Amino acid sequence: MNMKRMLPLALAGVMALGLMACSPQNGSSAGNSGGQTQNEMVTITSLNASKEAVELEVPYDPQRIAILDMAALDILDALGVGDRVVGTADTSLDYLQSYIGDDIANLGTIKEADLEAVMACEPDVIFIGGRLASSYDALSEIAPVVYLSTDTQLGVVESVRQNAATIASLFGLESKVDELMAGFDARIAALEEFAAGKTAVVGLVTSGSYNVLGNDGRCSIIGREIGFTNVGVDANLDTSTHGNEASFEFLVDKNPDYIFVMDRDAAIGTDGAKLAQEIMENELVKGTDAYQNGHVVYLAHPAVWYTAEGGITALDLMLQDLENPLLG
Image 1 (tube, rainbow, N blue to C red):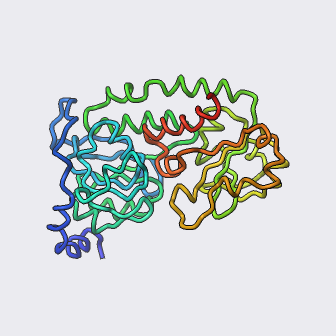
Image 2: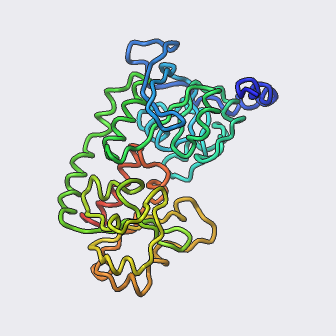
């Protein structure tokens, strides 16, 4: 049966209650500075369920926004239009906790949307990330779905800049993006100068294992933009979403100048999990030059790296996680 027909029937009983929890925060604030009116549509470039770039019509100056991606919420917050958010996925990110509470509907998680809750909010637009690509078509039956991502070939900084410009164009706030992005290029350049000629292995700790990451996914900024020579990618390993499990002997064999560690279990709040530092403090790792020289870097905001890469505040925090141990 057609989803468009099913959802309204299934949700008719919850719409009234849902709307009470889906009221915008304190009315609208910024926006509508580009000369267009609220009922007009704008065309942007977004991704579809197959992760292909497509042209998408979205209401200009949307008043009711459903969030299922933390990078998008980060950007909306930075642009000053967070008061349009009527529902959001759950998040543990400290700087986005103002969007978690009774006044804003819980729409599930960034991996599994609550379709009934989303529809009950009657959003003008829905933002998702890659974890919900498979739900794109179902969500599109409710409202236009803006699906943006970080392009590792383009680089994290430029991806943030372009995605922020896309989101800003919905509100006539394009001029604000340059202000928000100011300083990032200089910070990358300083880190790049430090990293020149140095080797690294980049990985995440999950379920007691160290998974090596290449330059094609999470944490790619370390190898691609900052310029550490990522020797982990020489191992003919599949370094996709969660990397590929590597033995600690692998770290001994590669013996990089630096070892970067992202604690996935801490990022997602895995109950009972050991901290990454407990797992990495073993005799094999202690034998590496990186350990002996104090060059094992634990990324201080793992939840940001894991769930919000692509946001403006997230980028600031990620760079801080590198600047503090590397540049002092």
